[in-house]
Image 1 (tube, rainbow, N blue to C red):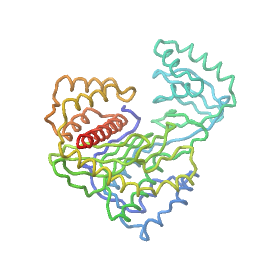
Image 2: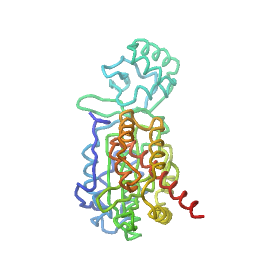
Image 3: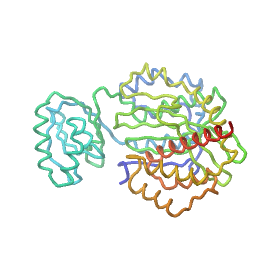
Image 4: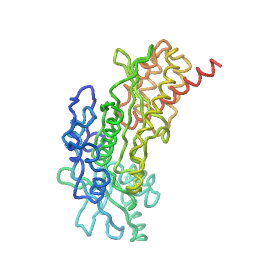
Length: 401
């Protein structure tokens, strides 16, 4: 099993660029859910095109939608009070097993449910890890049961997924959590991209996608790049990020990508909260979504600023020895963003001195990016790349004054 029970990674270079129709995006909507019905009412496809059989202005969108539909497992949410749940014990995979008494359903935790659940309830995440690592399961269960008896009316939403014949608890959220799940995040993103693409007469294409039963990350490029001498092709686009089991935001952020004639490339994403097209909190109502969703006009001002500073970088695109040392330092000093294995891979690359100050920035970043496979690590690495590009640009401008 990978990071999630079901997951797929797509590279736009190696899949069909066949486009879906406008009507096809409604396949993503689950019409038995109240929030989905509200989304359809607020964002009807009839406003996108008079002909629903018209093409969606996103190349590769048919593969993207079909891939999503194949792994959108059977899921269920249970909103329940602690007093109506009993703890049966600890599974062989070291997860809590809960009995939802009102539903006559027994479910085992998966992913980081046990840590997150106990941390949310009693700030006992680390304590639970200690008990499980040291085979003190009986102490953990006894302690948790006693504490639960003190808060029987406390209520949470439990997010379940069916795997084979078993129900698993993949996450727990507050009852304020609005279920802007991955299918709605993809619907709303394709909806807004199509609307913007038609207005700007500029198609999008999906570059890469990671889709799982609980998380989605999709990177979209506009299909027409800007050619910059001594650098390569500069693509502008956006990145969709959403997670169904974490109390985070559904976001669409600006992103750019540089590619040379040899096919080496790297993407870069601004720091969180900067150059964001929109972020929608999972406790936001649809009024907030309606206001934020069509702010893709921010992409044009982002394009103007990025083009200017990439032109600055193009004047001397090779990285200095000090700059390369600084990049490795940024990566290796970052806490809780890269796994031990990933950090060791970066250390090994640095020690081998494969990357020298004679290499072009695109080749350097391409080589670093090859070491990362986890999607969240890739996002963080791209944020570091953006930061480095900004530092290079600022350094060159100071040097010219």
